[in-house]
Length: 88
Image 1 (cartoon, rainbow, N blue to C red):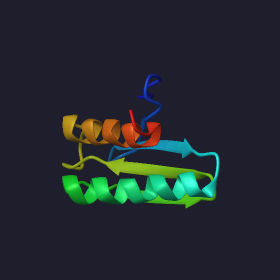
Image 2: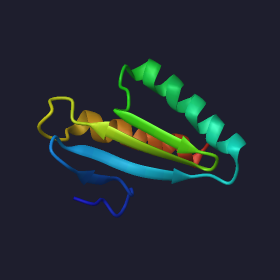
Image 3: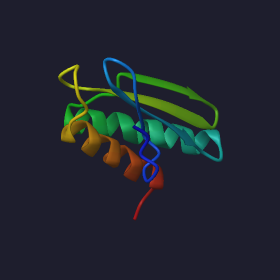
Image 4: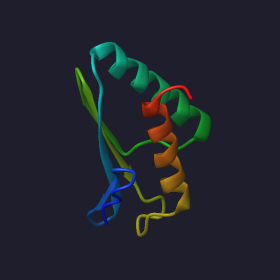
């Protein structure tokens, strides 16, 4: 299931959510990664996989129960989106 509103793509078995975030420069990428690390520590939720380059970050979230994407995973994805959007 692709979520056209948020850009997260549900794929695979076990199910995962995937999204690519693009940034204008390495400083913005690094700031996002630092904020993501702080969010993961705060929530106790961690991406299954993070892959990044100078101006992008790919994030994969896995289903906590290994079977279905739940509200906790979708809420974590929404918080990651908020980090990428920057301060209010």
